[in-house]
Image (cartoon, rainbow, N blue to C red):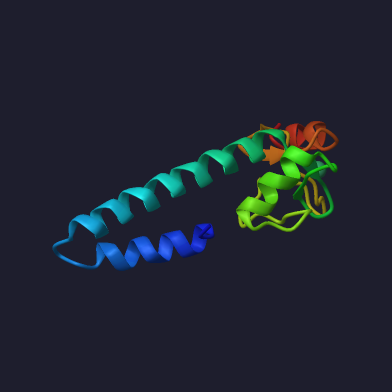
Amino acid sequence: MLSRAEAEERLAVLAAFASESYESHREREALETALELYAALEDMVWQFADRIDNPPRLGTMGLSALEGAFETLGWDDPHTPEEVVQCAYPGCNRWATGAVNQKWTCHEHYAALAEEGK
Ligand SMILES: [Zn+2]
């Protein structure tokens, strides 16, 4: 099975041709389907994976379904996402769990960041 990056790369190569054969059309469709499945899997992992703080990462908690998903996505466990929504409080290295005064915040710093806006 192609990794997500390999599928994206191959799709870009196919897209570079102005016209396409029946075979390349079928291959492009298969690659697009694979990328949709990767995206759906990643959405599910973001919803169900454990959020680990200091620094913010995603982990499987040893759950086999998540371990399989991480492996399919090519992620280490724990995985450091390219973009994380982190608490804005200075020095805090936790996942944000909400927002106040247009700043992301963790539970512990919600009150402090709310006070800043007064
Ligand atoms: Zn915080």
